Amino acid sequence: GIPSDWLVIGNVNRLAPQKDNDSLIKAMVPLKQLLKGRSFVLLLVGDGPDRKKLEDLATSLGVSEQVRFLGFRQDVPRILSALDIFVSPSLWEGLSISLLEAMAAAKPIVTTSILPNAELIQHEVTGLLVPPKSPEQIAKAIVRFVEEPDLARRCAIAARQRVLEHYTIDRMFQEMWDLYISLLHEKCPKRMEG
Image 1 (cartoon, helix red, strand yellow):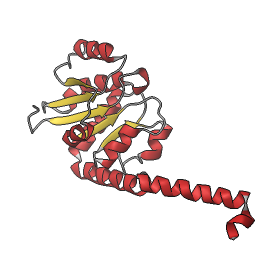
Image 2 (cartoon, helix red, strand yellow; image 1 turned 90 degrees about the vertical axis):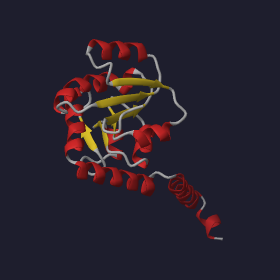
Image 3 (tube, one colour; image 1 turned 120 degrees about the vertical axis):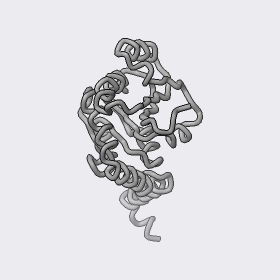
């Protein structure tokens, strides 16, 4: 139900403090000005303890029309395919599955420069990195992708390529297998030779 000329921004995560969706919602305020009248929507997929607080924040900032809370969904690939830009403002993470999914879906990505994200996303190569808790920087990065569609396309393609080269099940299985074999060689060198 979103018009085709609207910019669709999104995130898939738990609505919890570590994900800092506050900063993402706050970024919608400067984004309205930076986009100079272009219509946009932010889709937040997921649920969690911060949902009511985030809904209230969107209302208090006057962006409740631009922010849609979709709750827990089973059709994440379908939603990812509808996004123009994926944004993950996390304050801390392990290996972010939602970032990997967005990379695999070849989406331009804006994410925080925390170490786990910076290991996945190389600034201006596979996405754009912004400092944590930086709504203004999030808005500027989104606008940069809008104003530089070639950069957005290059980053999206490079992000997908990175996932295919380093994070597929087959690749991770092979790395784990190679590790086990090398450990066995160290532990039992004579047995492994015969």
